[in-house]
Image 1 (tube, rainbow, N blue to C red):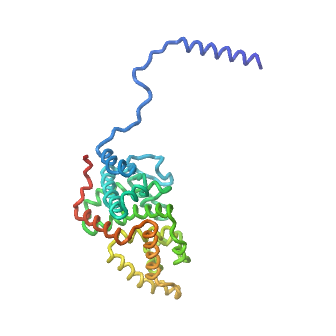
Image 2 (cartoon, helix red, strand yellow):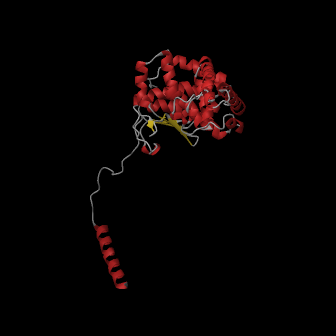
Image 3 (cartoon, rainbow, N blue to C red):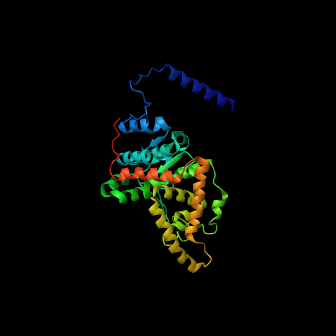
Length: 314
C-alpha cells in the first residue's frame, strides 16, 4: 500500500513540475464574461421613478428562478411591461402617496415586481392573475395582452378590464402584505364561517353574492375574502358597489331555497366591509372611501387617454 502511494506521489509531482515549466500563450480576451446588461431607456425610467424614490425593483426581463416551476411561463414583452409599469405607478403607488403619504408607500409597498407574459393556468380551469410572496414580492401575469387591450377597448369598458385583470390584482396582493404586518380581527372570519369552500371559485353559478361574498374567489378562505372585499371596493364606483349589494339581496332568495336559515348576503357583505374599513383606518390611517375616490379619478384619466403610458424618455 505504501509503495503504491509513493509511486502515485512521485508521478503527481512529475506531472506538476512539467505543467509548471510549460509556457502557454495567454489569450488576449478573458474567458470570464461580464453578465451586466446595459441600461436602456426603460431601465433608466424605472430607476428614476421606482427604484430611487421607493426602492422598488421592477423586473420585466425573464428570470427562471423568479417563476413558479409548477406552471409554464413565457417572458413579458417590453411593450406590455412599459404600460404595466406606468399603471402601477399612476394608479397604485401615486394613489397611496396621495392618501397615506409617501412614507407609508415607501415602507410597505412591495419592493419587487416580477412580470410574465402569459397567465398561469391551473388544471381545474382557474387562472392565476398574480401572487404575493413573503410580503415583499408580487408576480404579475398576462403582461403581453396589455398593448392589445388598449387598442380595442376604451372608456368604462377599458377601465373595467384593467381593474379585473390587472389593477385589482395589485391592490389584492398588497392587502395580503398589509395583513401580514398587522393582522385583522378574528371576528372577520366568523361572519360567514361555515360557507368557505376551497375550490368554490371555479364554479361561477353558485350565487356567491347571496352567500355573502363579493366574488366567487372570496369564498375560498377568509384571507382571500378580506383581500377581495378591499380591492373590489376601492377600484369600483359607489354605484357599482350598491349594484352588487342589490344583487346579493336577489341571490339570497335562491340560496334560501336550499338553506332556509341562510343569512342575508347583503348584510354579511356589509358587516365584513365595515370590519375592513375599521382595520384600514385604525391600523393604517387610511379612509377607504377617500382611497376609492382617488383611484377612481386616476382611472378616469387613463380611460380618457390623459396619461401617457408608453413614453419612458427621461
